[in-house]
Image (cartoon, rainbow, N blue to C red; front, side):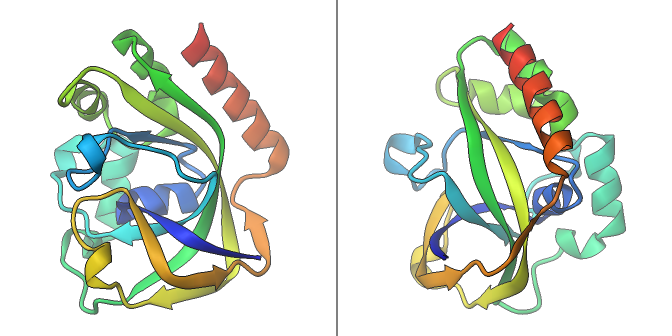
Length: 189
């Protein structure tokens, strides 16, 4: 099985997902996206780590610790090549129109409360929360990004479909189901 779609995400967030610390992505939409709105074209995608270009102040304590453990995330990469080792499947997508519900997602991601509320209120109120099941691939894939992949956009189409090979869930099935159900219950309460 192969996949040609990738979601650009800060490398520190990718690290949190790889360690099983994060199961939700808060998305608003990139500047380069049609009308600046986020869309979910497919439920399975590669995670495309990007240079952390925002302030450490947007992270919670766990995120700041990951950044401290990986100071290279604060510097532009030495090579233009990008290595991807995580594939995500969206199990649930929730669009929040009630700002008070955002806080329910805080315990499942490394962005802090202020950053989430800033995203929620950017342009027009509302935010997409994607509950993701992450898988580590047995054979990481390295690509050289094209010009079409640059810029502030959520999704990139890879030059060719990349084989997924064997995949191992980052979080045990039962643990993921429990965390997902708790999160969804809190968001829908």
